[in-house]
Every structure is written in structure tokens, then in C-alpha cells.
Image (tube, rainbow over all chains, first blue to last red; front, top):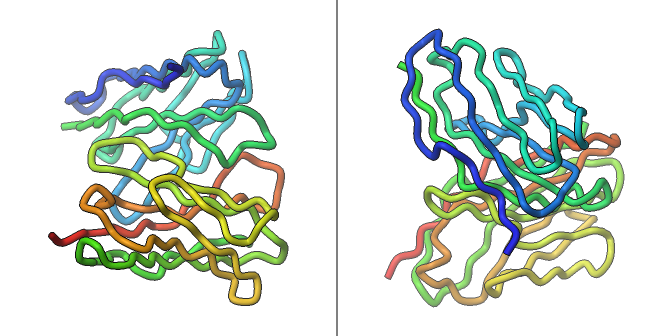
Length: 114
Length: 114
């Protein structure tokens, strides 16, 4: 079965360190997204990609970057981790523009920045 | 601007009784609306969608939702709650512009009492 996997599922890091969260999907979807989920803020879009070599900023992109070198992967990098980036991160994908409301989510990566 | 409001942050029901989770949207046009479910420590999963076809939409696990334009509502219901329904539920709207940025409600946590 097709799926979307995230790794690591849990990570603890220190302020200032670079962190990369991996996202891999086998749906062959062109569209991929990164969200963060925080109490009181719901889900907020960080970055998204429509296809290989395409990346776009979401509503909370400061301090984060992504790259898309193939269809399957969209790694999220925190250049210099801050305590405010402690959160649960979700990767998601969708098949097409017309089905853009139908997202397939990974199980999340819980990041703690000390 | 489009928005979505989930009227209850927490709903508690007894097993076997009906479930009602309320969602109101703000939009000047007929939107596409979705309900997602998130079980503890899991990613979000699409429950059902409304895309201007039938106003009563059936989803997975016995859930359904009715689109009422006059009331700008898209409430989620289930005739009989099961313990496994305990989760957080998100109402989602696709904004009017052509972006991929979905608008998520703040979520309703459903507690099912034995």
C-alpha cells in the first residue's frame, strides 16, 4: 500500500543546531506540504511544493527551508533550531490541484528544542 | 476572507448516543468543505468531503455531514458513538483563491464515555 512516512518520529535537540526532518511518500503525488501543530494554533502551513524543484513559503516559513529533488521526498530543515520551534510536524501530500483538499498525512515528528 | 469556526473545543458523549460536532464557515461563494479526524499520536485522516454535489455527505466509520448554505454550516454527525471515535476532529475549507493553503478549524476533541 502507498504511504507517507516521517522520520525521526521523536527528536530532542539543542538551540542553534541544524535539524532535518524527513518525509517520504510512495503515492507518487506531485504536491507535498509541511505543517506544524501547536496547542492554540491548530495546523499552520510551513512550506509546500507542487513538484520537483518547486518550493513555496507558507504562513510560518521563517527559520525553515525545504528542497525537492525528486517526487518522493520533501525534507524540512531547521537552519538554527529555536525553542519556539518545539512542535509536532506533519508532512502531507495530495494528488492534484483539483483534489487539493484531500491530504494524506504522515504520523508526525515531535521535535523538542532545549 | 474565508474562515471556519468549530463551535465546541470539547464534546463529551456516552457510547451509543449521537454525536454532533459543529462547524460554521464564512465565505461569499459555495466552498469545498472537509472533515478530518486525528487519533492520538497519529496524523490527520480525511473523513469526508463536500464539493457541491449532494448536500448530505457520507464518510467513513458511519459519519456524515450536511452542507446548509442558508446557515453556512457543515456539522458532522454520527447516530451512535463508539469508543474508537474518541479523537480530535477538524473542519477544513478551501479558500477562494487558487492557492493550496487550506483553512483549518481549531479542532473539536471528542470524548466518548463508556
